Length: 277
Ligand SMILES: NC(=O)C1=CN([C@@H]2O[C@H](COP(=O)(O)OP(=O)(O)OC[C@H]3O[C@@H](n4cnc5c(N)ncnc54)[C@H](O)[C@@H]3O)[C@@H](O)[C@H]2O)C=CC1
Ligand SMILES: O=C(O)[C@@H]1CCC=N1
Image 1 (spheres, rainbow, N blue to C red):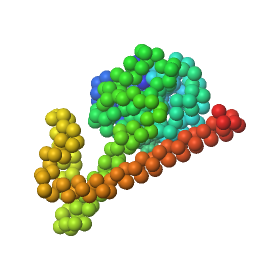
Image 2: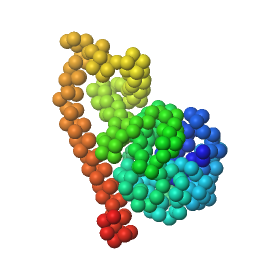
Image 3: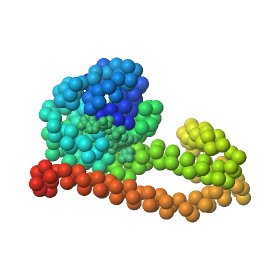
Image 4: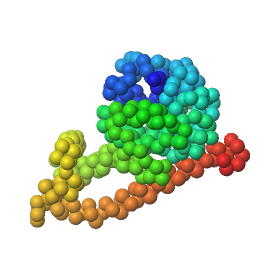
């Protein structure tokens, strides 16, 4: 099977690295197009994939085609292509829906929301298919996603919330850890910020191992740490007071951003067809 990738940004590169590292494919099974050809060179040296001169060549050679551009570039890029009906199109763009893509491609289409952590072969890819995806195409895509982490089938209704938990989360967790480290240094200025960051990274790795290897729930882990009448309980009380509002806000704002993106994609349709699809 030949896998095409258009756009070698964060997600395109993650797919190249993850899929090749996992051993599920060999680099020669990949055909990639990047607007700036030279930018692909360092990655191509490590993983000798095929580098196409044009995106049209990619879609003609690929059985499975990942479009990895930013959401508002997806439809304009695809419209310039003549997509063979047999190609299985996979969009990774947040805010671009299956119906948007169905207006362009008559064949099988999936929407996948991957995660940057799949470069390390861990993390969740969210997957939703349109009805034209055959069981064989679904199985082939799922196998690839399972090779770089786990694949969760979701509906288009839940994909936006799940995106925050799986795909935005590595960035959000990094943001939380940075605030954690900065607050520690504000409290104890003699502590180096990089030391605080290192302590948190190691603690995060240990925490995730403990949760996973011992099959602990979050509550069980809290019980192990928070000695009755001890220090951690005080911290948990503060979190219980402040975090629900912060996370409610976070889901509200990201939902609004999703809605805005979808509106902008819809406008691209209207500008093109002079009506609302
Ligand atoms: N970064 C992340 O963790 C995740 C991103 N996504 C989705 O992945 C998509 C890409 O995101 P990133 O990789 O972070 O963005 P990015 O900005 O790193 O990559 C976008 C790439 O598209 C290329 N591109 C733009 N126009 C093009 C064209 N006409 N032809 C060929 N290539 C073109 C750019 O050169 C760039 O390399 C977005 O739609 C985003 O919603 C989904 C899940 C996670
Ligand atoms: O922030 C974004 O828009 C992309 C989609 C999910 C993760 N990164």
